[in-house]
Amino acid sequence: MTITATIDADAINARLGRRVRSLMFGKLTQVELAEKIGTTQSALSRRIHGDVDFRPHELSIVARALGTTVDALLAEGGPSDYKAMGIRPVVKLSDRPRRRSDSRGPGSRAA
Image (cartoon, rainbow, N blue to C red; front, top):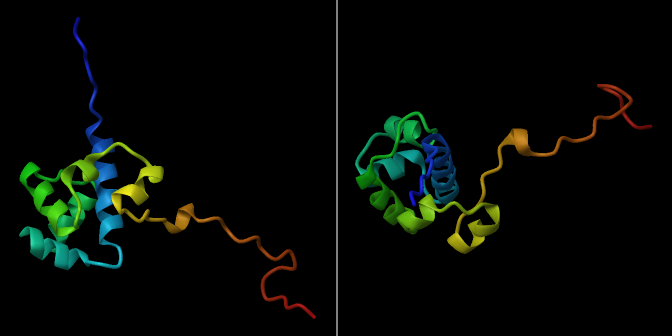
């Protein structure tokens, strides 16, 4: 019996980028993390945003710099697992609920 697994590299890179951003939040800037892993801020940004893959040897350096493990960076768990991994989810402005607009229109004030 043969077992075939399909790997979605784009999904893995996107998940990895989200986790790196979450772990950096409030602790390190991209410049600081880039210095720790021996690259430039622009190269790190391209990796975080999924434009370029992280190199295998960089994963252990990134994990160590962020106080986690490579396994935690690559784990398939979702937001329910973030707390256990010490990850703070990143919320994009577009993901936040919008405020209900005032039906009186712009510039109106309550009396």
